[in-house]
Image 1 (tube, rainbow, N blue to C red):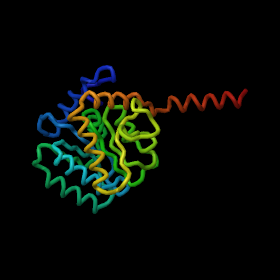
Image 2: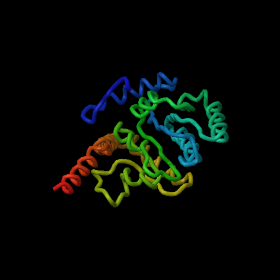
Image 3: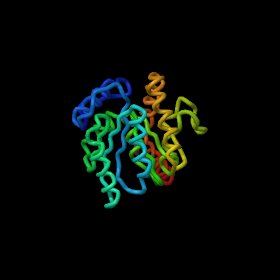
Image 4: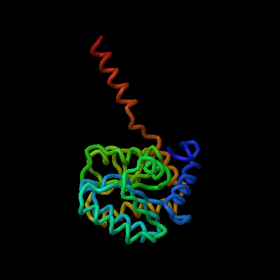
Length: 223
């Protein structure tokens, strides 16, 4: 569903997908990182932090793309206002809809994806982001903290197995801190950022391993 497939062995297609996304959404072609949010627009997803992430990204000279549809009229009105306000900004696009094909292209094009949920029992966004080599910036709750391991501070994983950025509080400063660390790595340490991408792509959260474990249990019981 993306125009330029790529792998961990050859990431060149990611830059081509970014170029394609910018063309489709009429964003300017520039040497800036691209940050994304993909998901339902409802209170579970931390809308106040999503809103803040848009403007913090722009203030930090990054681009921002949002794709999602609102579940409440108040949130829908809020983000429709933001869409109108930012309509002429060449570094931002808000798509208030469900569009699976566009979602895949955004995953493939973005450098980072924010998932600032208030709560998240499992979470697919961060897992999909890892597969696409898109560095997740997540709040440390539920399934998010079980799948994303902070590059700088995580005590569970050695540095070579860390795959993103995690913050825990629900205030703007906490989100900014995580975003700033990711943006600094992208801007000032591009090889380290590339390594982080590859470490994320190495994770496999598919059913392959659990399925094998289930088979082992069944074989044990059968025996």
